Image 1 (cartoon, chains in turn brown, red):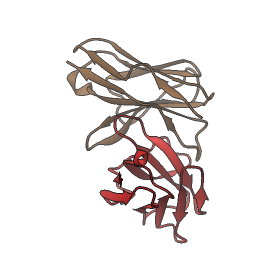
Image 2 (cartoon, chains in turn blue, purple):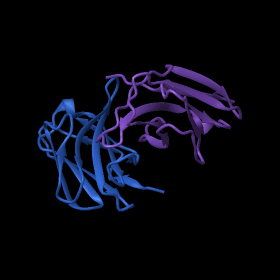
Image 3 (cartoon, helix red, strand yellow):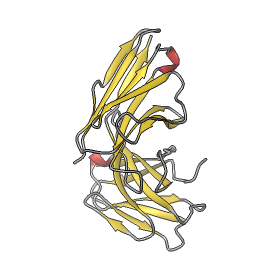
Length: 113
Length: 110
C-alpha cells in the first residue's frame, strides 16, 4: 500500500512565523502535490512537483513556496504565516501523470493565531 | 466548474449494498471517473476509477453507463467503517489535480 506521511496532524503557529510542513511518500512516486481543504471550497491545489527540484504553481500559490530536494520528500513553506492560511493541508503523490490516482496523507490541521 | 452531481446524503443498513450515484452528463471522451472517500479528520482515500468499462477491486465496484453520463459506486456489504463522504470526480488523464466537490455523506446504520 502507498504510504504518504505528513509530519504533523495538528500545528499551531503565530502570525508572521515561517512554517514548514513536511510530506514523505514511500512508493517512489514521481509526482507530489500540496492542497488545502476549507469548508465549502473543497480541495485547492497550491503547488505540485513532477520531479526532484521541479515545481509548478497550482491555483493558489500566493504566500506559499515548496521544496523538493529528494524524490520522496515534498515540503510546503509558509513564508510569513497569516490567519487566512489557517486550514487543513493535504499532501498527495502519484506514480506519474496519466490516469494514475493520487494518494493522500492524513493532513495537517494548521492554525495561525 | 461542477462536473459531477451527487446526492447530498444517503443512509445504508449495515451489511447491505450501498449504491452511490453520480451524474456527469458533460463528461468528455478522455475523462476518467474516480471515486474517493474521506472519513472525518483523515485525508481522502482512493477507492476506484474507470474510463468506460465497469471496474471492481477489493473495496468496491464501479458501474459506468454505456453513454458514460452517469456512474454508480457499489460497496457490496457496507460496514460502520464505511461511513464517510464519498466524492465522484471526472478528470482527464493528463490533468494535474483532482477537483473535489461536496460529495455524498454516507451513513451506515447498525
